[in-house]
Image (cartoon, rainbow, N blue to C red; front, side, top):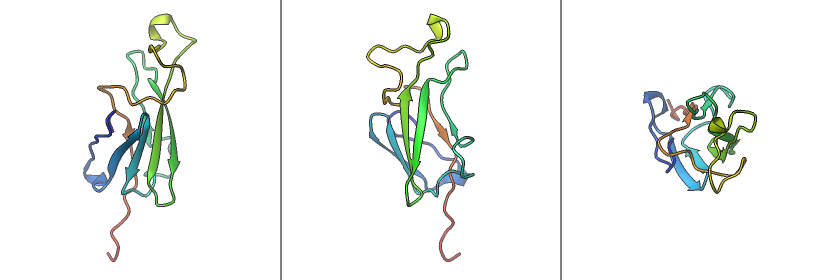
Length: 116
């Protein structure tokens, strides 16, 4: 999924849709949660050239299996200045959209068709 809520699916996740609700908040519908019931292996956040995450990611599984995904600005205060990911107007932990030109990969479970 991308900054504006646009998304791409593979053949195994057809039926999933993504909507950007507000800054840093996205809703994934047409799914039954994550593909393996664990967010640990189901979400990949974008990295900088030094392999440090650009954002924090949090989520909530809704009663219908949809996933509310929130993304937050992430700074690295314990690294050299050039690698800290400091963005003017944002502090560590602020809700922020997925960085332009980057994406968050989410592996989801697609509910099986009823009656089949």
